Image (cartoon, rainbow, N blue to C red; front, side, top):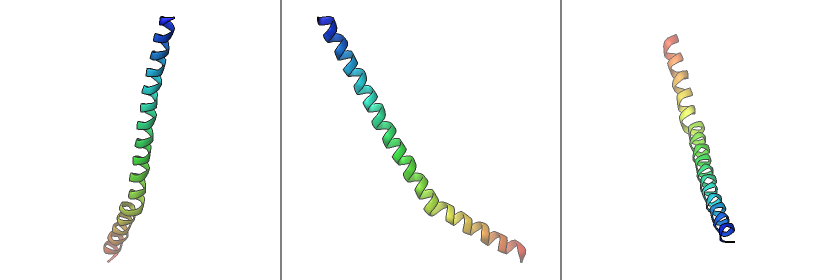
Length: 60
């Protein structure tokens, strides 16, 4: 009977580790989505403006 309790404790411990992994992946995914959104809203448009300006200057 004691072996059964020990095994159950190991299973719970493993489940806690996987729960921690899940939480970490969720945080990572959210951070990635936020950084991608920031890039698309701020960095990319600025880069596109610079490309347009440089094309105008080359044609002159």
